Length: 136
Image (cartoon, rainbow, N blue to C red; front, side, top):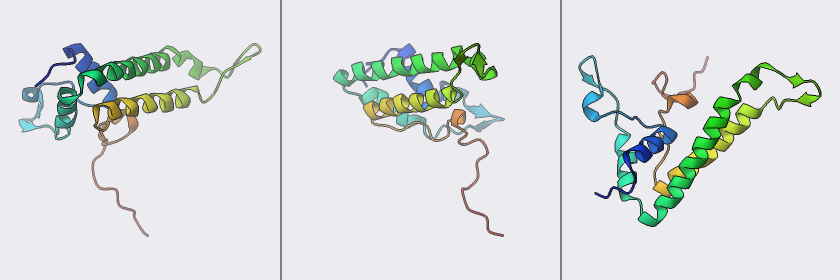
């Protein structure tokens, strides 16, 4: 197993791709193993990435970090629509989110994996169940 990425880099990659940053021994809830079924995807991808591709992965992480920071720093703009003659873009957060997802998917492509489909930041996996249409 290669260790191309530092532990800090692996933490950032897991964060941006929506995977857990816990040890397997700590993933028990009420004595029952918690759902970490998808965790092997990211761990294997980080260990198998080509050394030459690690540079690209680091660039994608930096881009994700930058967009995420901008999303956090611009929160006060959610409360205003205009300041004097300066108009505020009402869909800024949504546009930043789209950009974040673009770089996040680019990172997943470099690593040859997928963002976690159960990432709660994007409303996935919140309630479990099956996606079946209901007919009246």
